[in-house]
Image (cartoon, rainbow over all chains, first blue to last red; front, side, top):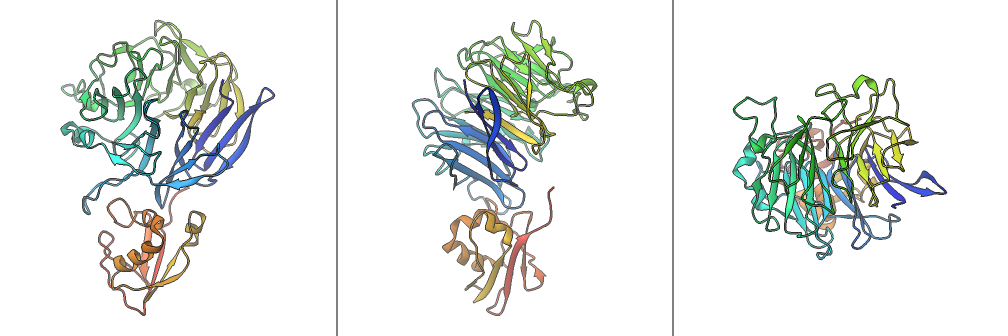
Amino acid sequence: MSDRLLVGTKKGLFELRRARDAWSIANTRFLGDPISMLLHDPRDGALYAAEALGHFGVKLQRSRDGGESWQEIPAPAFPKAGTDGPSVSYLFCLETGGADQPGWLWCGTIPGALFLSQDHGESWTLNQALWDLPQRKDWMGGGFDDAGVASICIDPRQRDHMTIGVSTGGVWVSDDGGTSWRGSADGMYADYYPPERRHDPEVQDVHRLVQCPTAPDTFWVQHHNGVFRSTDAARSWQEVTTIRPAKFGFAVAVHPHDPDTAWFVPGVKDECRVPVDARLVVSRTRDGARSFDVLTEGLPQSHAYDLVYRHALDVDGTGTRLAMGSTTGHLWLSENGGDAWTLVAGHLPPISCVRFG
Amino acid sequence: MALVAFTANLERHLSCPVQTVPGDTVRAVLDGVFATQPRLRSYILDDQDRVRRHVAIYVNGDRIADRDRLRDPVTDADEVFVFQALSGG
């Protein structure tokens, strides 16, 4: 089990440690700075923290001593293209490359782009093939001014097989390490779009895409329009209609060893975005979406207006320990697969991401 | 040489003391600063070397007009101030 949890908030990074069966805040870093993403690289132990400084742009920090000290390293940036050219406004997701690619990191950004570092973040290169997709003109912002690459899944069996989720912009798959991309959102639909466009792959708002690491043909998606699942490596998607109490949400986590088990945090769609009946719940399926358990133990069941962002729900490598952070600064842990939750901190800044490691 | 001063808020992230720098435009003056403090560039300018949206640059008492190319003229007698526009929560 992982006994360390990194929590990224609007006002800094909080490191929690578990000792004597209890979690507590062990360290606070970058107090006052918005943290957009965190990563623990299991290949070399490095930690990464992405910042979105309100005035001074995106920044990337790295620690090679377990979080004791941090060093600013270059953040992904677009090549020079003149005064009308793009500029990275947010580091949306950060993932490691293949197990046999030490130092390789992938970063998804807003505007919707993908960057690769092959040297532990010392330098970054824009993935030109994705940026040059003609369909990208139909991507658009979902909660931000521009579209964003919110999810990157590297197939553990074959690291050149990559699947990314774009909000708003669909699911894109590469079989050649990012040299070429194809849309892969067959079965998804966006019912708020004009009827003739609602099935187009490039208009799907994929809030969050996750891949089961030990059964990598299974993906789960929390879409703006509902929940979708694929069991054929994202070639086709089936809508999940059994989820309760609502199909809207941002976050999803999949069990690392059981592709049929996944967790969601439903909310009222879509401008309202609060828990249904002001009761915060986690919805869990353990049978591949045939049914869902609505989990409430330890979670506030009256006047709760917590929203859990897309990167603010995580499960550790065992599949039994989960963490969840909300926009109201509440942080919960579960030690039993979500059956019961414990409030670990209740007065943090708004939480953008949580990550074990 | 123009005098260049930065908001004290930047000191939380990196060192940027008041300094005198040669140059006849805001761009030239800032390039002179970045030559000795390269990391500062991305705090002030975006990926395309435009002034970041929430950063303000003044020459003496006047806000610069050219935030994209920073071609506003600077003389040796001028003072350039770089600070953050008010925003956030």
